[in-house]
Image (cartoon, one colour):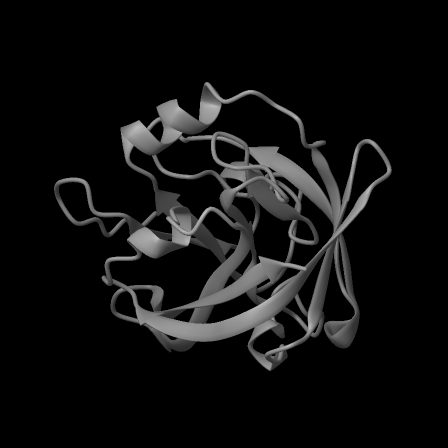
Amino acid sequence: MIFRRLSGKNLLIMVVVCLITLSTGLFSLIRQKSVKSVRNNLAPTSNIVNNYSNRSVVIGLPLRLKIPSLKIDAAVESVGLTPDQLMDVPKSLDNVGWFQLGRRPGETGSAVIAGHFGLKENRALVFDNLHKVGVGDKIYIIDDQGITITFVVREIREFEATANTTEVFSSSDALAHLNLITCQGTWDKASKSYDKRLVVFADKE
């Protein structure tokens, strides 16, 4: 696993790279001849986790994420922190992971959902085509109360692997946001990581 982190209270997109030939970590049920997939880990500051976990809950838990323009319809797993205090990732390569210690989609603030990017033979992983989403595209979250919450894509941005990404986790405009994240860019054999991170910023409709 490869971790890159800034010191202090900076939020930094983290990457964990799994080169799977038989089984590794969370992907112990997968057996492939040659699989290269990427897990995205975020490192939230402790005050964000504490503030969010102590809030009064009025919004349902997210169960599914749909992006019709990309034909994405994925189950949402709730993920927390790894022992290294990084945002964990979904166990399934086809699912997305919602950071359950942060905001719920639809709450005031920035909810964060991560998905896998990489290569699994000829089958695309859940966020392989996230870069194709367009400004104005709709993202739908269906929660455990049967309510559909609609978000509209505002911005798509690439970050360097070592960039400070505080804005991914936090916002100060008293609005509800949903931020999707995955890896992007060129595979670096030396570092065994992609050199970019893709973030889609969306606002509640």
